[in-house]
Length: 309
Image 1 (tube, rainbow, N blue to C red):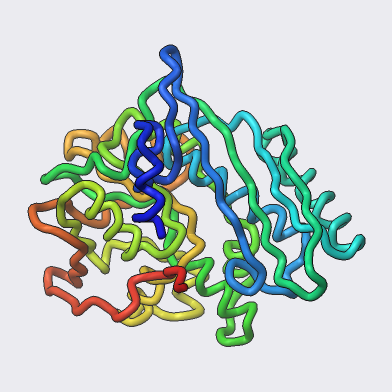
Image 2 (cartoon, helix red, strand yellow):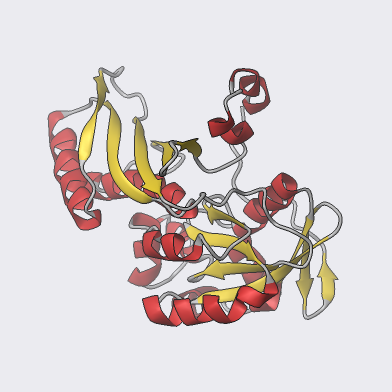
């Protein structure tokens, strides 16, 4: 479907529909626009609180702005009306989320729904930045691959919510209330060659970065950062690490940067209090490779979340 849509996405701002957001060059600054949707039963559970759904809808869109180093300026909401109590709780939750991120609601649209149909909600986020927003396609041979924060917590949190895993509240919080790395994205943008957010899984999104950049990405499994809460719930086996790397909803920043930027990246991470871990290398070839202490690991059948027709 995306390949079909590219026929109409001819403006340079569309970035060939291969990036996290559209980028309009307005001369003295860049306007960044993104639109993400979430669907009941696919992106969130029917029993999730409306306030958590509102937070997630906003956060996943702001994460796309973070991946472009953009400062949010406002959002537009596309909302499917349901029962009054749920709608009211969602509106209150969205108000709180907007306040937490300092982002205004600028408008949008509401539509009626068929009773019993899964809720489908959309949001457009608008931001801007002074420096050229990094794309997914700028990684070059010799660049290092980095990740902010920790990986796998949200996927484990979803398993906890489903009763499939015993784990702490810290994991379910990462699933219910993701934290877009807005400050990190803005500060990292001038230092990186390529950047995107991890929404569908570290491995599948690394593959997308490699494909967009026309190169290969090798991920060192032992270097992927895992939280203490994740380690306590799943352990530190190879399978546990692969599970973390194929889980979605992390909304951390995945980026490539030249080796000489390493010291500045680490200093920045210390300054803003968000760890940045070097987890791989960009090389010649195509696709993604996983290494475990130097030994090649067979790729799992599923690299991450993908929508299916």
